[in-house]
Length: 401
Figure 1 (spheres, rainbow, N blue to C red):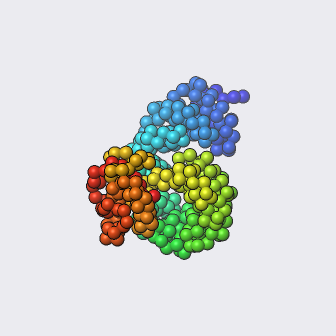
Figure 2 (spheres, one colour):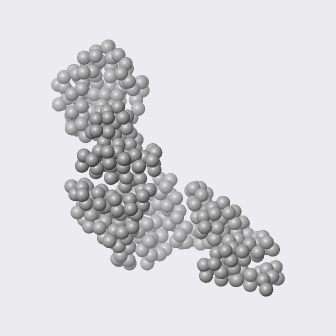
Figure 3 (cartoon, rainbow, N blue to C red):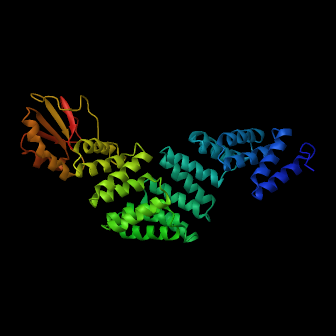
């Protein structure tokens, strides 16, 4: 005989919870729905029904149920926490952060809310807040390896690799086989250019978790940097076996295949990375290099322009007043060239200055101060100036490469 939910809501809730705990989702959902049909604002039924919807990725339903749960019981931290998770699942990062803040207001030191709020702050680029929240998590839960690992990841993201190593040591002291901690250790050591140690740490990460795609990829990249392309390729392919949608792994594979002269394979790998992430600058750049080496100069030069959008290098490119030169007549015009990448690149591409001067251009090259004495006598160059100085009057400008 079915329970009379109106007469005995507590028994009805307990029965639905028993189904929930036993993994009988359909029966649990039916029980919560029956209870809510008679008591629409029952906070526990709303909360647990929302958790089930969230678990099954019915995000809109979960958000609605959990919002009603927080309204019915505003002092319940777990309802605010779960509502934040629903907003995050929906891609609503700021709404999620507000919910996790509400959870912390009701329960200071709520570990999940601290760590999730840190993730939201990291996504927003607030590195200081991310580090502070993760540090607070380690104070709240000093015996939780995940808290120390999150703190290490935050420090690493903030460029504090040495401090990250100390946090990783704390995590590994509690959980010596925690693959994520070994992975972070490898990343920190790589950031410090301690490549053999980094490779060893990343090797331990994949030994404990062979399906850790990012660890496999970073191990491959580290081995490639140490001149071990065959081993690097094996780990890039292991990363893709674990996660075929990892665009970074396709791009890295394209890079090492280019270096090996396997250009059709390299171009296919870069194309797959771009299919997964159309705005992935590194993949476009890698594709451009492979195309240039393969002799497809128009396509290669077009893709090579993506170097200016690479997160690590975009800051080095600046748009100046006036038009970028597109091949217009240069007779009597001043063309400002902007050196880029390394000192050797600036010198190597200075050899094209005479071709521009032959078209009647006054060529000004903005370069690293250390090169100015050498460039002063460069054939065809009107003058060389420090690249960090204010641009002189010019008719056109152009990035040197």
